[in-house]
Length: 435
Ligand SMILES: Cc1ncc(COP(=O)(O)O)c(C=O)c1O
Picture (cartoon, rainbow, N blue to C red):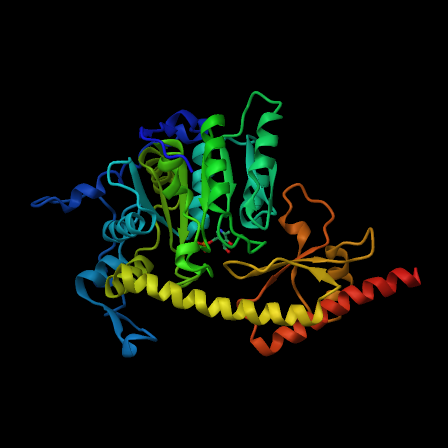
């Protein structure tokens, strides 16, 4: 991979949407950072007085560390129960900035920043508002995560599918789409899930990431790197593909084209709703501007719990916890793969997932039949629920695929689940013969 000596910072503001320009700084929230200045008397915010709140402490026990307890009292408690900054708790942001330096090797002077959101989903939605106007074309890795397709479709975006396979998003397909692009309004965003994709479970190789980064520079678009499953990577650390964020300087000799989304959902708690955006400062500032105008801030309470936990673990402890979670899912994956091998051979094909929590099965159905149809006809009757492939195709069409999640399934139920899927396929053929 060629390394480029000159380091240039891309100006993402030239790609900003028109709609985001309409958001003014929040009158109150822009003054909040000044409240902590020494000697300041603040009459600014309509903050409730925490003395009236009913909690005296918040305490949570950890499973490991011999039942270590996280306790929020007094100052920490007041902060946890109070309004906070729109971009998130400053200490928590710093913790993640240090993590990103360590994990992605990004330097201090590359013009990037982090902010926190109520889950990465919220941040992804905000980032699309920053870079795309209603109806704009958007490049989207396909099969695609429906959580993003849902709001993009509702906003009337033109969803340009870019195909992925066992090595992740395919740069050849991306190049084909970009060269053939007919309209004047060129896409300004590529949305991709590089590790353990939802729904395919496949990860993008480093070679492909480099090719995609080069195309991003050539065709001037941003890469939204939704890495919700990056902490659940089954590859040995040395074999893991580096992130787009890590690679962009080396590949393109520039920084500022990647917005990276991390999530605590899959490794700390999905219900705490905490996600992290890392990206060029002007883009992060715009996302924060949207937050202060829309829902004010991410939850102070869950941020404070996370901060106390993360300070207890440190970066090393956090990454060790992620490795343990990845090992847990890897064992589940192996068990599901063994059950599939035994019961789905000849009835479906699949690639073994390299991260995350999904198998993407291609059912070997009679011509003309699709997974949506057979699930609606037979799924409930046969006691099996899974998501039909059509849900992951932005421009909805018939599909033989099925997304199967193995995260919650006890190993003993995996055999039964595969047998029931096998029965769906067998019944489809029986039905075909009877017709
Ligand atoms: C690919 C992908 N991105 C984002 C999310 C949303 O994550 P969060 O809980 O951080 O909002 C999910 C949730 O399943 C996901 O699969």
